[in-house]
Image 1 (cartoon, rainbow over the protein chains, first blue to last red):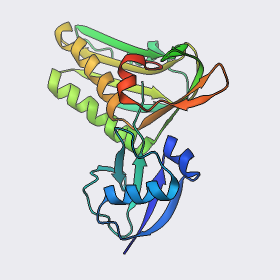
Image 2: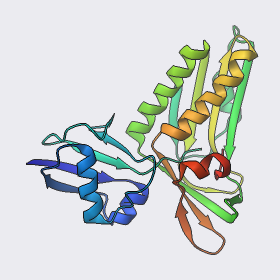
Image 3: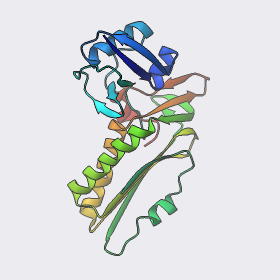
Image 4: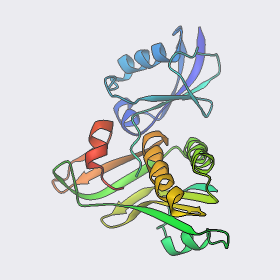
Length: 80
Length: 147
């Protein structure tokens, strides 16, 4: 079991109704954690181009979830 | 070389001046403007937000890639965030090189990569009072709000 801080941005923040939350999770990797959060907070999980970052570094959904991490879920970016 | 996020209006004259140098023969700039229509809907304004720590990190990576790939003398990009009105400049890219052959594709590279990779989001406000996040990459290439 890992305890992580999860932060939501833009669309995900509005869907979740919160900017951040502490989560106790058994998720094996960040992709599983995203599905867990998606189910809990009714996030749109079908979007193409969702990105994840950990402790202010871009990460991969295959990366493991480490206790104490701050995990950032980014909906598809749209600068310009 | 500098990537930054600004809450203030962008001044292309000042941004350009910061890149002036005597060994440069070419300067190409790109400005992305807020326009009044996207995907067939009338847009009244846009609100941009960024996650600044990672936006600066990822944006700086894009600039470094452009510099080494195209042999640039200098390159800069600034993206505005907050509420923007029609006609406002949302993003500015400036590229400086010895010759134009490098400057044109490098400028295109920077704006394309920034749009695809840097954690910046925009919410459109439409004339009917409805709002929507722009989040479909497929739509973006043909119908972006600005840029």
